[in-house]
Image (cartoon, rainbow over all chains, first blue to last red):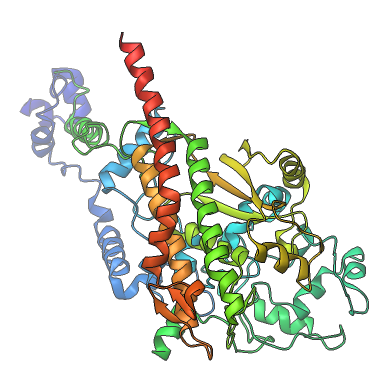
Length: 262
Length: 288
């Protein structure tokens, strides 16, 4: 074997000519040593980048930097919320969760199990934004059978259909929501000119929010004419996260504000 | 050992075995199906029974609140309207409005029970039935019988129950309200309907108890929220063990719920025994 090496045989040549390293392969590292070849350590060139990546992951997992891991900027008023206030822990241990999902993959279970965190649901939002039944459009109401068309179109039964988090604003859906339920009006007295029905017939649904706030939580004098209504741009700016044209006086403050007030 | 079993491959195989054990060998108990975490127990009753039970409990609550609180309260000078939660308001919730408070609390409870209130001639237009709901309600108003159906779109077992005019305040308030679309209500009329939903067709007895507990909790909290305000009114009744029929009093939440339970429990327990007993009898039959 040494003779073959001296004559310039490489690892493949040793194997071909003498059968070295072709049985179980356990002597290959020693053969490499004899040949003066370095041991194969494919990870060595990656060591630096891997260490940097590991350090970054550890840094990002540190609680003070949890915002770094967020999908985007917090929505208006949510800057100081901890992630765990909305992202509640999923039931079970990580192992149980993974096992449950593997069982779903192989057909032994019907539903997917949430892993690490639950999906953010209405309860998480209402924990802070509690309107005590005075919400003009409480999301749960839209689970009633008669709202089937609206559910199919805009899913108003979930808060996140209109208020997607980590988008840096307030409302993330285009202003197409009123049209799904308010095509017909039965008002005893409609002093508005043009009338509510006329506005609906003309598909001028952008005017709705120029007088009415969607959830009815602001205390303000309702504009009596369309001319006196809030500017559409001001409404749009508010929905994007700007100041409220409906004022700052509210029926029900959010939890943080209530706690601040003592 | 063949040449293909090189150390990296052995390591990979070992890793696969470890992953297999981690993922398949079940030291921890498997998680229940998502959304069914609260099931527990092995005896099941039909969801329709649960819906019937909660409707019955609700009817007792509504009748008690209307007949023993709102009716006598109005005679004492207390006011009830739909704006009772507004700042500075010195009013209490009308029965239908109180029911909305119950619905909101149920929505946030661990029970997956849904409650909706609706009518053909609704004072609040937002409660007006339309489409399929209106068709069902009109059928129900004719024969005064509940309707049970499965909402395939949402996967919800659903039941609609008639709301009868059970007390004079029902008739007078709904006929005289400035926004009412109907002014000639009479005692016994079907004024509207409550719609109840539940996501599972089979319900364990433990789950049933959880739902009833949460429903009663919702009743109590709703009534308590009225008491929290009424004590600050200019005309503030004394809250304790006495009722408005005795003077300017309101029962505290415990007294109110004790009466509620007294009125509802007999029927609730009877229905439960009937349902569970029937299952048991069937099991005995099958065994022999």
